[in-house]
Length: 459
Ligand code: BGC
Image 1 (cartoon, rainbow, N blue to C red):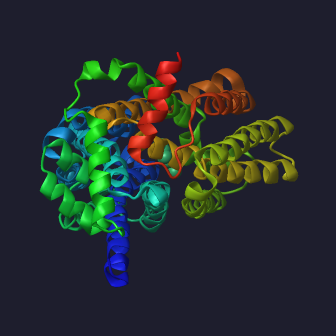
Image 2 (tube, rainbow, N blue to C red):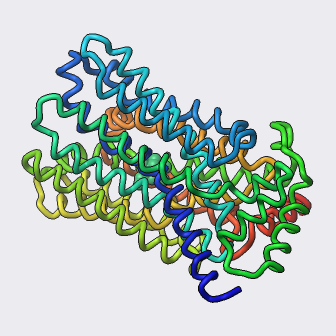
Image 3 (cartoon, protein in one colour):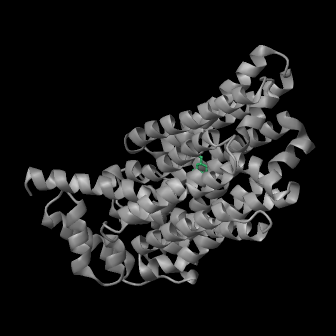
């Protein structure tokens, strides 16, 4: 293979991963935009409390449904087709929500369920698609494009929220503009190759070979070996739900579902959703300072995800988890302590903001990208889309639970108690990662299967 063809294949695989990663933008944008939009939706629709809660939680609920939909349809129609479908559904949902009449709350809520469905499909399928086209030595970095897009989406949404904060009908713009990244995604993804592993599952060996040639720098001998390795590992069949109970798959599911839950119940979205509220309660004066500080959170989240992108394949998943989750726990205990010391002391405010930043940085180099990465790489091909969807559904469900219970938890335990509770969950997460998460860096998806086969046999 000539150097020119190699460089071309290398560029292709990066473009493929980056384009599919755009699916994360939809997810991030909606996550970041709703808090600001809600401030205007509440007076316009004359709602608050429970009804506002429904406007917000329509998305995670829809996402659970979307991930469920992806579980079988991603095998049936292919990963790429499903990402296109999710983009189109998102565009429709974003436009309807932007045009919702203020006397028809149900239109707004149903369109947000639709947006949720799109996000659920995209988050279940895009990381899997990327992991299936990526060469093993840079798979960590490529799947992390998805998480990077999530963080960029959150940041862009904060900025859009700021820009339209005082505009008439600003919320319509905030929600409607979400259609733009979705259009980009649909146009971009239609030009990419199908997942070679999915093509092999469908018995389309020639198409799989052609797809691999577009994204591999090695010569045809290596590609034939890769095809053989995939075929041997998958027993050429599409697994059923019952196959999730095979011992090796169960061992992998412990890791995937465990991380899905722990990624959420260490409290990341209390900060992402409520950063301005938390910061104001540490004693900072005025809305704009609080908004500025939350912009800081958004920016750090992006920067540290870029750091993760560079380190995941060299340092490995386990080392990054150990460092990051330790940082998560320490910062949560410090945050709780800052609230205990009191809002009127300047250094307590500084400590609170510092620990928020440390918390987000630690999440961004560990649980943030690594959950999505492992969820896409640890399951055998025959059940990959079902198992990855199960992890995604679990993640969205706990996203919903945490955002619903955060404020009541503060009422029950005070801020200090609530953050110490999340800090304790962080310690549990550290133990879990140390005990259950295998190192997957540099291994092919098929070699990762072998780790769990060996684990299951050892039992
Ligand atoms: C999580 C989201 C979170 C985001 C923050 C993602 O990995 O799944 O729930 O809002 O990271 O960057």
